Amino acid sequence: MPEKPDRNAIEVRNVSKIFGSGDARFAALDRVSVNIRENEFFTLLGPSGCGKTTLLRLIAGFDFPSEGEIFLYGDDIAPLPPFRRPVNTVFQSYALFPHMTVAQNIGFGLEMLGKPKAEVEARVTQMLKLVRMEQLAGRRTSQISGGQQQRVALARALAPQPKVLLLDEPLSALDYKLRKDMQIELKTLQHETGITFIFVTHDQEEALTMSDRIAVMSAGKILQVGSPRDIYDRPAERFVADFIGESNFLPAAIVSTAGNLATVRLASGAEIPASLPDGFAPKGDVSIVVRPEHAQLAKPEGAALAGTVETVVYLGTDTHFHLKLDSGEPFIVRRQNARGHTDRFVAGNRVGLLIPADSAQVLKD
Amino acid sequence: MSRPRTFDLRAQPGFAFIALFTFFMLYLPIAALVVYAFNAGDSMAIWEGVSLRWFQAAASNERVQEAALRSAIIAICAASIATTAATMAAIATTRTKPYRGLTFKYAFINQPLMVPEIVTAVALLIVFSRIKVWTGYSGLGYLVAAHAAFCIPFAYLPIRARLESMDLTLERAAADLYATPWKTFRYVTLPLLRPGIIAGFMLAFVISLDDVVITEFVKSGGQDTLPTYMLGQLRRETTPEVNAIATVFLLVSLILVTAFFFINRRKA
Image (cartoon, rainbow over all chains, first blue to last red; front, side, top):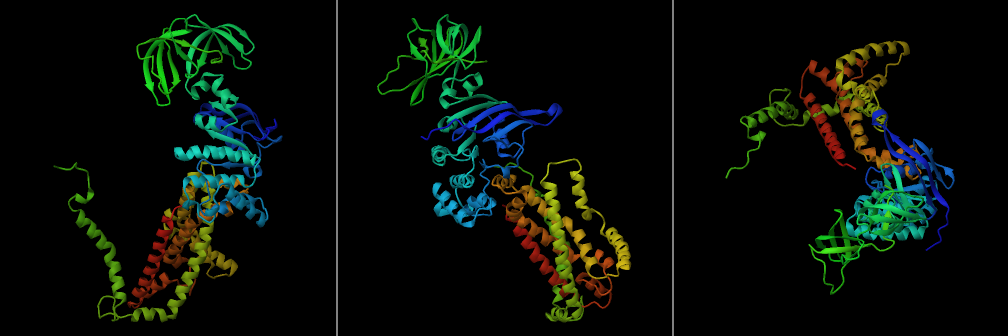
């Protein structure tokens, strides 16, 4: 893996995008700031309407921010039209030119930049090879499959060697198997080309698979930025924990804090260690989150929490135990299945719950 | 077992009769006109056997030749001007954020469809006669200008329909790939718009070819187009020569309308 220098390709500073006015006024982006490093695979993740596509459009130049600045390697690009930005986009609908061949589509950007013919041709050949489409160079874009169109869209956007490549949910139109293949292919392509990718998706699994870092967005704000592992293991807010993976939320009270660690008291009276989000020093009542696979079932005696098994769901690779805790909260435990494993826990059993060190996380809200 | 009863217009009493009667009334006169074009006799009403003599007569008639040529020149010039203006108007009214007055602008562009033709004809007669006095020019320019004006809405409608159904992301993609607005238009919008432009041109061409009222008012002496020539002929002796000309006219229109249909059906 190449070294990733801490140079910022894109810096978004205090950017807001307001649509409408008066009562219909709506902030699609609300004072968003984020730095995207050179050479990284950066994902904007969130539900529809969270502002992720708006932010991408502002970086591409299809729309202009109401406030704030966007820097590309130190230059403020926010007021520039799209054709003056060394940034290219892979569109959700691919937007291939239907009146051109595959090769003409790929060469379009270079032609518009006024590159000499020989250079355009050489680069088109190189791109066709990169996305394994050499045989189809002369085809019309309506004569190739969805997965092939996807590759052409990628090659077309990469051909002018943009400083940043923007990808707007490019895999959403593909079927499951093809999507899985393309995820790996995209990741490989990003490594090979060394171009900074900014990827927009609402699919958390896709984000976890491909990204170096993820920004989770909701209602026009970026809630958390971090590596997939950070986001999954250390969600800072309830929304982030809920949106990515499955979560158990429990009420707790802070007993003491030291740096990024806290001791919290659960409803059962047991005290367990829990991690704190960066720079967050709460007092009193908080919520904590525990991932289903991090908790363990045990005997009720001496466990941190106790409850009753309500349902056991067998899912092939693992089993889900749906518990009702003595304090009334539901709680799900996931356990991986192993050969010859016989279940000691069945519906109606009293069980204990162990929450190992480093598996509970305090939430900001 | 009875099927669920749905309303089917074709099952209503009298449907067949009304439909046949309408078709009959629409096409019987045209059918008669075409049949008598092949009449061997001199009459438009008495059948005397099959012959192509009236087609030959029309084709070798110098006045018919001149009028046909004049009609073609006017139609090509007027349709070209109208299509260019309509393309610009269509882009200006679709590639913009909706604003107050846009609907009014649509109505304004389509005005020739609504204003009675006779009003336009009289107005043009008055204005053009003044210009003729001032400039001394009395060529075909007046007819071309008048035809171009009333052809604009016919060219505008298919072009606008095409622009509205076009995926805007394509133009955005071109801009993203370093195409300036002009290059985006030249290399993406225009090629994709071509079927709409061709359809608009053909429609404008047929409309111009067919016009009588405005032409009759605006033309100077010796500037008969095919339709005004035919009108003039009918006032004097009536021979099946007019039928023959009308039949050729019908054929040309049918070919153009069929082509229009196929071009318009080929969506992007």
